[in-house]
Image (cartoon, rainbow, N blue to C red; front, side, top):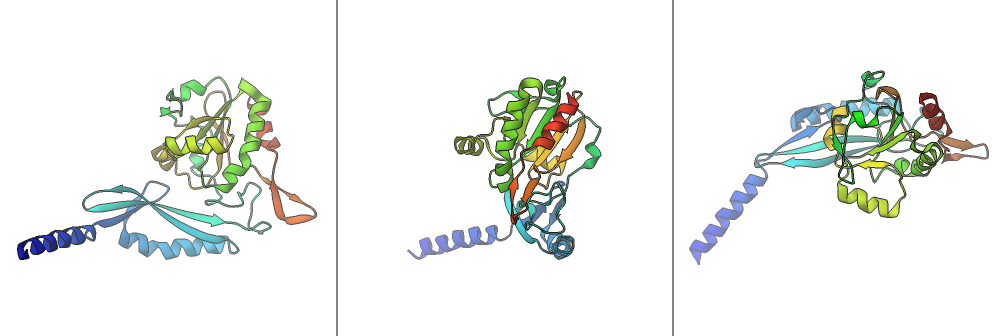
Length: 255
């Protein structure tokens, strides 16, 4: 009995010590991975800079475990800036909640969109060549993003108005299963690409929703965040989602 107890204690101690020997690493939106010491050293400065830029906003940090090995854990680090309606720091295209409200990787402007090949929800491989010949609207979203969900009816209406003259594609890091479950509750009439975490990370996307407009040659013509909210003169504290008319005008100019 004593031997069994000693063996159990040894196994428990080994597992316990092994679990706490794992080093932690953090990956940011640009794909840069740093160790925990560097992450903690830079965290305060980063949050202070964001708070200085958006003084009335509330800031949330989210670390999602994306990879675990015997000796390490890698987290995907996201910083979300939740803006208040009527905040003076809001821009015309600011999303009222969600991640940081700025367009990532403006170096893409005027260049071919780097879509090599991604698998759609129905199992097809989608490449940039498949989109050429028509303008394209690519919407980046995720299931817990409130402004992403709020703009979907307007996006659906734009697709209904323009029909097959334009390609409408949605991209998300969410799993195939989660997207399927989401679509049972929400109507989003785009061609869907799930499981695109690596792709969105490579693009450096930190703001959701993000809408990317491609011309007929597959080049990035414009990048916007969410559809702008509209302010009622009598209720400035509770803006409503816009109708997407500006997005539709952008696409018509690209026809």
